[in-house]
Length: 136
Image 1 (cartoon, one colour):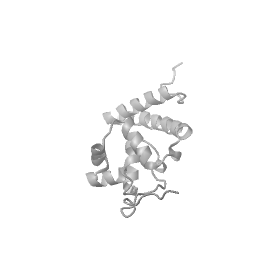
Image 2: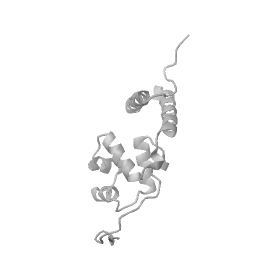
Image 3: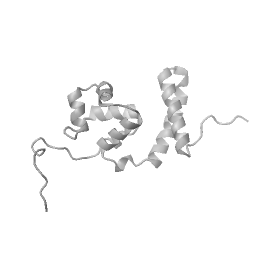
Image 4: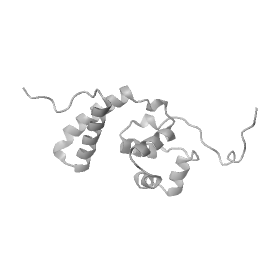
C-alpha cells in the first residue's frame, strides 16, 4: 500500500515544511504539479484558518510581521505591490489605507486570506500628527 505524500498538518514544523515545498513548486511553474500545488494550498489554508490569529492583528502589524518573516524591506513591497516608495512608506506609517488592489496583492504574495488585511485600523491624519495627546 502506498503512503500519502501529504497529510493533514498537525505541527508548526510540518506547516513550515509544506510552505517551503509549495513555494518551490510555484517557483518551478511546472504544469504537471498543479494538483500538488492545489492540495498543499488547501492543507496550508486549513491550518491557517484553524491556528492563526490574523483576525486579531492590525493589518499593518500583520504586514510588518510577514515582511520580517520573509526578510522583506519596504523597497521589496514597492516591487511586489507596484506602488511608489512614498505610498509604501505612507501605508507602513499609518498615513494611507490599503486599497482593494493592494490587499489582493498582499494576500496572493503572502498566501493569506484577504480578510487578514481587510480590517479596519486607525490612520494617522496629517492634521493630527503634530497634536499632542492630552494629559489626563
